[in-house]
Image (cartoon, rainbow, N blue to C red; front, side, top):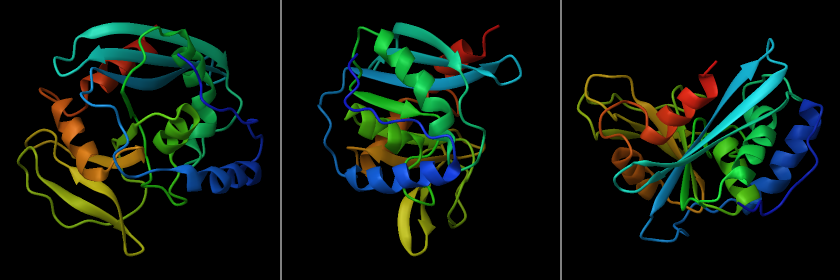
Length: 221
């Protein structure tokens, strides 16, 4: 698939912040996706050789039946350290390599990380969405920023995730009695629509099928 835009990859946090500040204004948090959605994709990362090699996996599934249509893997040297809030600079270069290999263009990508639920409102899902000009959702397993009210244990319940008085995402119970997910708009999708698609992609387990399959590929030895 085609990459919409590129930029030079930074070597310092200061350079990374400049890129986030420059690109964050391109993020769209309203619905600009092609429906009906026919293909959804997940992206995930693994690392080899003590973290010096990045291994990115992409899994494209049919929607709504969530059958695997296509997968790809890409390897490249890791060029940025692990620093919370700057995950995209460590992971996206290899993810773009993997995405360029697939022939089936997804209508929506679910990312294992944050969208706008990020200190500068530009997590990995937003960053990837802007570079691809494609709808993306941040579906994180852990909280980065924000606070929320107590969440009922039943699947489908959610509470607003709030940071500095702004709703930046949702804490979503995707499976009854299991830890929640932290969902946020990445690009070209509203929070309400993002929640709906995440629930439709989690028919059995806590994580979306897209993420589960991509994670298995990225973690395989």
